[in-house]
Length: 428
Image (cartoon, rainbow, N blue to C red; front, side, top):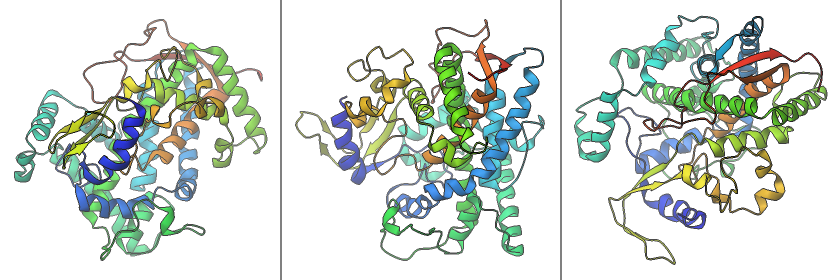
């Protein structure tokens, strides 16, 4: 499929006629359809603006300090580290703090109930995959709620966490400047626009009709969506980024130097503004997402007949449309030598020469990921924290070249990625 065709589909066809595949019977933004989705997205888009992400950055930074503390212990004896475990815990700590309003410190507390139940829910076993297949193959069954994708024990736990946090904050008039605060304001029909923001700046804000506040159930669904959307996506992106940096020492050193020089202008602290100034960091992360897009494909349903302009392709009502993002990102026409990790592909000059829809790691159109700003700032914070103070190399047991599993819904390595960390002794 050509990028120009994708651009037409997401701007016209997907804008007016698509619904995402249903993946659960929970009431969340990922599973809503039609006007219900637009109404909720209208409310939630305003919670993911740059100003809101910047507001929550202090919470992300605090978790990154714990991340450094944990990794520092691994350098004492040159331990071989399975990076997925502690990066997943870092991601969950950030999510728990920003979305649920609690500090679980799973990086230090290996027995964290919050982390354990969340990880358990994220495991896609055969039964869950079978339910997913049946649900998407026979959508009418969703109307009868024949099965749930979430263990009631897990659902009740996270709903209870959210309910307690919301009720406590409302009772004591507490403001923590996090995602949950924004959802509570939406629950109370308060404006969450910051100075300089207008409704026109926010996606899908021009919805007609009465605006109703979010219910506790909707807040619980959206906070868990925050969890499920970020758990694998953010941690896996960091894992893949560290893998490529470990394989490419020159790129690693160049990035470390940029981080060091940038932080020198900000009193040595990793802050939101400093990350915005790291242009090579942005290129490294973009190249990571090109090589390892979180979702290898994008899926939608067609609800009306659609003829793709200037082609013989006709998409009928009820058809399932799949856009192969992984294949698109590895098309040598757009990315020469596509399996080589080369951040320079995303220099300003090179980006101008490439069709913008040749690279769509977050999807495109009205249903593109609204949390991408938050996810990217987490990735960059973790990578900057680690590359500044440590050098890392692949452990001999790690696959090279890397092999990916073919039985997962997201892009994941077939075997654990293990890395050896050592402290950087001198400036580059």
